[in-house]
Length: 317
Image 1 (cartoon, rainbow, N blue to C red):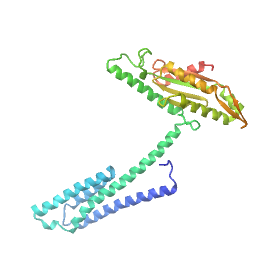
Image 2 (tube, rainbow, N blue to C red; image 1 turned 90 degrees about the vertical axis):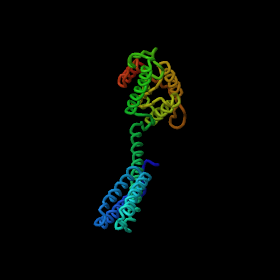
Image 3 (cartoon, rainbow, N blue to C red; image 1 turned 45 degrees about the horizontal axis):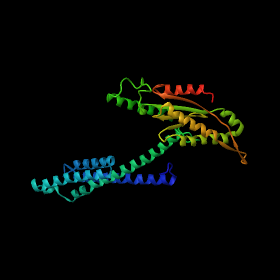
Image 4 (cartoon, rainbow, N blue to C red; image 1 turned 30 degrees about the vertical axis):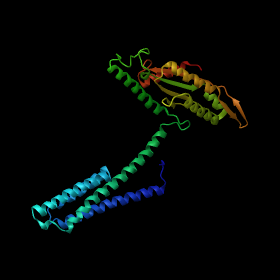
């Protein structure tokens, strides 16, 4: 399904919605006319009309199948009442051709209500998919396709809560004591720690001045591609500033995060760019890093990020 509908598709959807709504209204109008014409001689006719409305509403809320099932219940009750009137009460005046209409109106109400409800739910699902895609785009960096800063902090908080839950389960099982926030590196299981890594390109502004915006965008795109190669699928990757990137490395102690840092340095060392579309030139670039591990260096997203940012400022590249 595409994220955007052309005008003809919107008109087709509107037409289908109108037709289903019209069918439901027609069935209710017919049921009202049957009620009005038969009410003087049949005092229970309002009950059957109320059952029609109820079946239609149930079909709209729960779908066609459930609406038809409820219509079978309504048909059974209506038929049982008429059989009682005929065989037990011997009241033959309660039976006429008008009564036969209710046998058709009950399933029609269930079907038309369900048809309308299923179509409306389908439209809502389609629009939720569209708006969900828009939300994803708003939380992604358009140049690199990585998360932006807003999504990064959402995911960081989620990973911290996951690590804390692992410790709580171990603590409840009697395998640990204390709190997750006070957990030392020696006492922590691998699934109870995570590392945040920040890195940025040294002298990126000078690079833009020398080689232009196009080459700088190529550099950023190259780094984002290398991030996919040197990290795991479970690692969260973000571009949080012009030349600054961030990684969330779940179940990663500092020594393992160093491996990722070394791989990134190797990737940036081999970066090549085209100058004036005639020759390839080797460009020497450097990255500077800042890392912080939870919970030892921060138990909240703000504290952990602040520690990593402070470490980043100490690294001269």
